[in-house]
Image 1: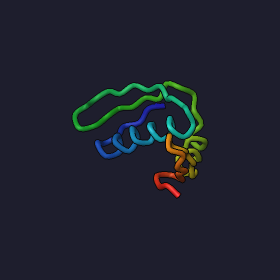
Image 2: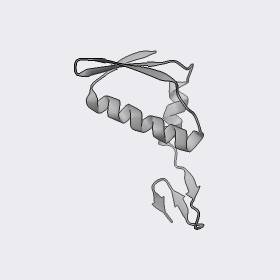
Image 3: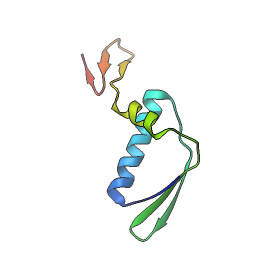
Length: 76
């Protein structure tokens, strides 16, 4: 799958990759080609876009080394 992205779209894409890695432990292999002001991104893995959207939209819980419990980016 290939997509042409502007700078803002590419920034959002890379931030989403980090979130997917943190929440689900999934690394998504991809290549990036620069053409002028655009980024041509090709996803090399066979992934379900709907599944990735679910990961990005779901709330997630974490516990830090001090035992604090967090939901999303906030601690409760």
